[in-house]
Image (tube, helix red, strand yellow):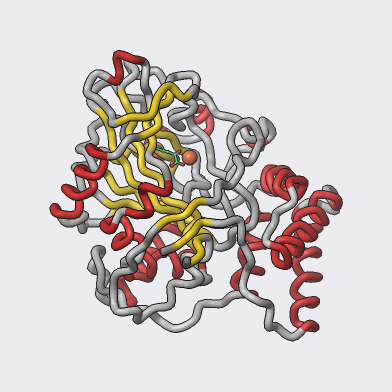
Length: 378
Ligand SMILES: O=C(O)CCC(=O)C(=O)O
Ligand SMILES: [Fe+2]
């Protein structure tokens, strides 16, 4: 059994103090250079907040907000600098084998995938989720109550989703993390060596699962819901760098809510300053098309079972639906549990401690304690 708790200690720091200090000073100077000596307070808030977090597992809210201001001021370079520091604190350890649902087979394949994510922000895998796994997840979705939200993001019910839910104004319906993480098929996906291999190589540190979401998006006549992330935005999730895996559990067409994003816009320095100056705001389509060529805006229309991975620092949205319903499973791997994901109101949702039962599959050949450290074995 595993319990999710507010216990977010990073690995114990077993570096030599002088190495640690040298790296921190280097970090500070790189920040100062990147911001032209401005934003010293923000830099100190982030560095001190990160050190506090390493000690106590708690992120001060001031550091969380400073992280956003620094990100905007450096067009994302700040996240790269801290990520490098995290890789230094917590470098990759032994190699996993790659066997798993993505059938990556060897090092060359994995390097190729990681390189494509680095340059384009995403990778669309040829391999699909096995049919029985898809069916299991659909069965789970059909028998588990989910939380219904309307267009205004208000909670309007918790029940098994019915076919006429659209008529009642439901636009999004999400499963609780506790229910999701208890599902054995989802546990197999999260612990799949090929999935973990991509996350660890892309993040260049041993990854941590920061959460798993699964939700339905319902049709709205094509009108976007902010609550369902249907307007362009970039994510400011837990940590400094993360990857989200997208598992389509329904067929997704142009009209049934494809994940849509701007290729390459995850790379630091590429977001238009005019858009960054708006803070953590949702961006209307016209503004995206004003700054980016239409051919860089990609929509993933693909059948049930499709697997994609994205660095959601890129501008993205779920396209609002005109027909059907979209069911998505989305595990997120991060390089640190520092901070909470921000929503568009600049607030961090509270962490909800909860108990879950997890039946770890596999032969125990890899150590899941870091990956699952958000959860505590009970
Ligand atoms: O629904 C989608 O395709 C995008 C959702 C989103 O914004 C996210 O996963 O961060
Ligand atoms: Fe998002």
